[in-house]
Length: 543
Image 1 (cartoon, rainbow, N blue to C red):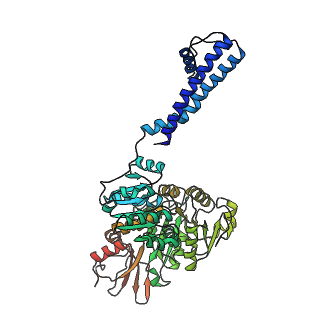
Image 2 (image 1 turned 180 degrees about the vertical axis):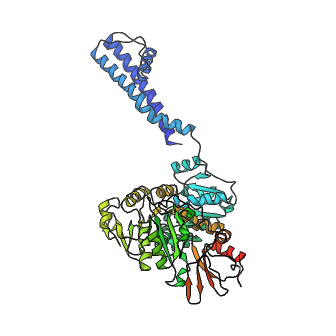
Image 3 (image 1 turned 135 degrees about the vertical axis):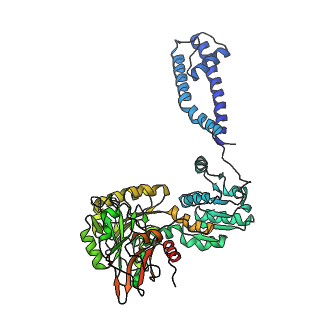
């Protein structure tokens, strides 16, 4: 029986007893003190009127001091009953009576994915499954959370694991079980599912990496640590040593380089299209893409608008890139030396520092508490702490904080102090990603996106979320290109690939004048995504 209902029964009984006591005391007082006897019904009427604050019937004044004191006390009891006790006891009963009942089972679900405990880590996955027309059933042990999920339109079952809720979701017909609670509750859910005879796939999201093997021993098919994967993704976006912006270009040695240049807020280039800015006329440099709000626009078209704060991806040799930067007003080349400033010494921050250090990068970590790898104890929101950490001389700032509010505010502060320093942010809730981009972050990734990618790849057989789209340089022959010029937009529009260099004998050509012609023995280096490269091969078959 609900606790609020029990309280209501107690309240009703106490109210009846109070009215009886008040009526009896009133009878005695009126008889002995006032000399005006009242029968029980008259006294009960007075008690009810006083307790409900609606009036006193025919009795409006009293003479004896004790009787006056009694009536005053009774009046205050009525006020307390009406304005304090009734709302506390009665409103919960009414809410429980009229609120939507939470489902306790889902026996008709089939070919569904059961998710034990909702959280940010599975939010993106649920959307991916809905797009694939795969239903989900969420099991939540918290009543408030379950009610919120129901209001959002999710199919949710409210119940406790210890009370057999896993037996009410038709688990035998499910295509997978995903456990997303604390590690100990995950283990209990997995053991419960296996003991009930479920032989399907169980995927676990693990908090502590040391618990991966015990979770698998408990019966999970796979156990993932999204925070470690998130740290790896942030490190890959930060350093070209971890993950180069353009794959394959390292095979060309120092002849060809990739550079990134930010278009400043006051740049005359901001708002112009690529054609209007005439960037294609800078000999020896090819614009192969633009980062805007964490998205890579590639291949660039003549109508692509250059965004203030956007980052152009350039390919050329060292001299041509330097000349390009000197001629382009309001474009500043991003640093590729100096340390990475990491804010947050938690699990994600330590993983980022570990990966960057392993590949030879320098790191500097700030955290509010001393700990392993922390170089400076302080608040990332303190401008003096940022100055002390050498903000102006870092390659990038990686925000690995445990809450989104300080991440957003610190992004604003950093962009105000050092607008050209890239900010790479860890986000906890997927709905805050766009807000942090609006604050000025160059790259933001949520744990929901990471978990969604891991689980969607396993359940749907595809990588549904592109964390960091990759451009690559591919070496091809001139077959089919004889009538083209490297700078002609037709080739890029047709295949999505851009010619960035031509190898002719011992020379690597990056400047293509109007009279340039391909030679039969030339090796051509094209740049584009993996899909664009495949399209190039289809349109220009290689021997």
